[in-house]
Length: 202
Image (cartoon, rainbow, N blue to C red; front, side, top):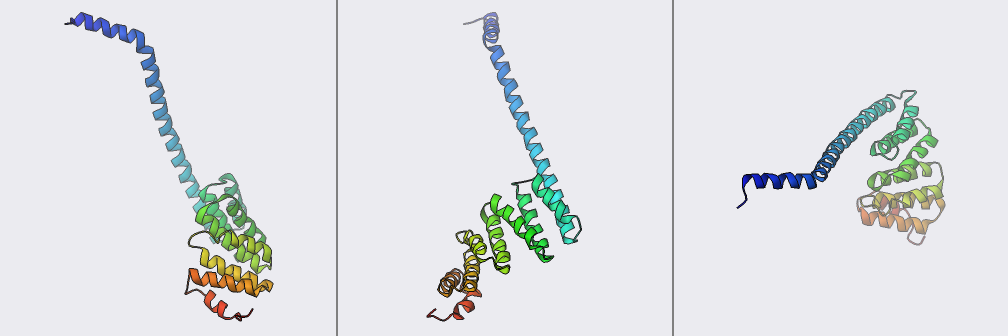
């Protein structure tokens, strides 16, 4: 059986052989742990700042502040790719359209279409398609609305707008097919009345 002194000597020898590696590992471990906590804190702080800035942008747009459009675009540029930038773009588009500035509205929606994914992108697709349709830019409107056709929850409205565009272009057969798709996705939609307004032979 080893004596206490022998055990101590073994510990000393072990520490001599492996001590530097253990210390280095602990230092790295602590650095990673606190580094991650710092990164996490920084991320949360950034998101909170974005949220606060976004709220100010919305308030300016709602109040129709003269500098609201510029402020919104600067915010979108500074936070490009973030969810808050996409939401600010949607708000800017709505405010611009309300004021008749359709070019700014279309541009803001395009930024969301280019960078966002999922439902946010589909919302931008639909809204831009409506604006383009109102400007009789039918081909561009079709391209926008077709991008939303496969997104779950947007099939009915996308198909209805597609029908509107095709009907305006004189493609009654295409419009009828689009309205049928809209009704299939949502039987109680306005598309049913639009469908019935197109002669079956067309």
